[in-house]
Amino acid sequence: MPLDFELVQSSIPVLSSTIRSAVSEVARLLSFVNTLFWGVS
Image (cartoon, rainbow, N blue to C red; front, side):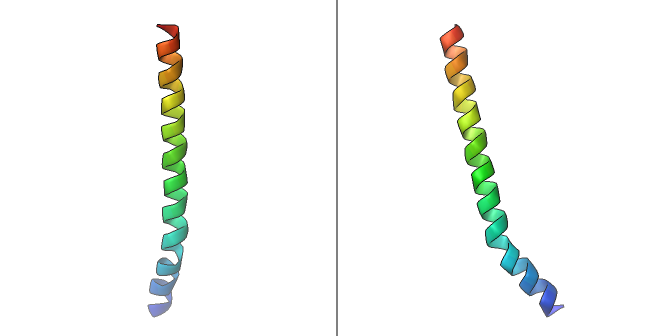
């Protein structure tokens, strides 16, 4: 059981950095789409 807990604890930073980069990618995409939308209209 302690081994599982350690595994989870060690994977949290990787997971959070993956989520953070995914969020920043989505934000970049949204701002691009927004720019495109305003450029069209």
